Length: 72
Image (cartoon, rainbow, N blue to C red; front, top):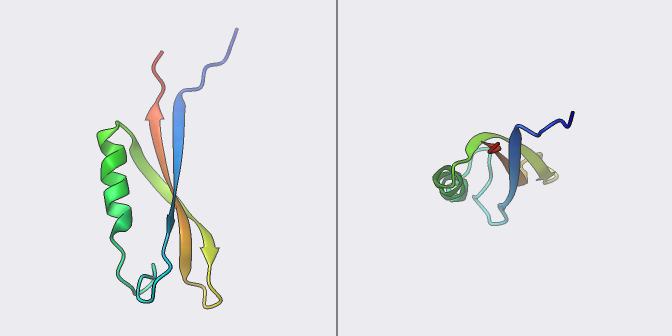
C-alpha cells in the first residue's frame, strides 16, 4: 500500500536589508502581501523560520511556511 502525502508545503524567503526594516523593533510589511497571496492560492500560513541574523541578533531573512492539503 502506497502512503500518500497529505500536505503540500511552500517556503518563501523574505529578506530585510534596509535600515529600520528589522523584525525586532522596525517596520515590516512585505510579508503581509506574501501571506495574502498564498491565502488566495488556497494555502494556510503555518509559521516562519529565521534563516539569517545580523551580528546584533536581528532577523535579516526568514522563510514563511505555508501548507495546503493535497487533493486525492
